[in-house]
Image (tube, rainbow, N blue to C red; front, side, top):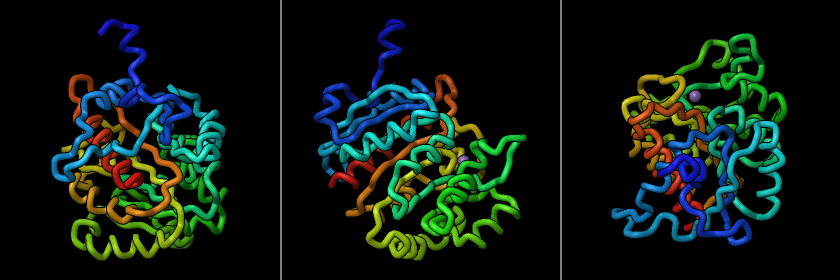
Length: 269
Ligand SMILES: [Mn+2]
């Protein structure tokens, strides 16, 4: 691949036009390695005996700036399409959520609570984005679920409890998966959802290319079992965030692409 071809790699495909597509992907400082991996993961799934992308027609609109995320998301959602946001920072989710109807449930897969009031002198940090969202959402922050959390301080835990934020630690998922899934189903009910996946929700052994690893994360199998609760639900948007490429080691990017394909298979089944 020469340098220019390298630069133009799209997420999965450029077969569909923007008009034909039902998924509009866009990046916010998206690692090139993630788009490259998307070209290499087989969409056919031998266990499901189906092409996971059979009903997903993806168009990659390229990268936008963080401050353009809200408008871009709104434009895609109002065209009746699914935005797929590939962002280096989790703060992109805060901007995307401003364009999502307020009664939708926000399902965040993350090793961290991201509910700090301030982090490293900034209130706009990746570690604060969910706190900022809760402030905007007010009483609707009870529509937030944080799944797989295991890095959190006393203040964040208190915030989750006092604001009735639904949360499940990775440990809880390991020992009580069936119960967690039922409670998650009850939480979603008939609502539409937005799904945000911070790759550090996974165990660092299978997703090492993240900015802030936390031991004791989810396995691929547990994640797939959890997302089963999204079957038949209206998914308004999704994102995959916080990958920090590790050069030759692309296993995190391959995992990210595979779970995105699996989510599409569920959403468009
Ligand atoms: Mn995180």
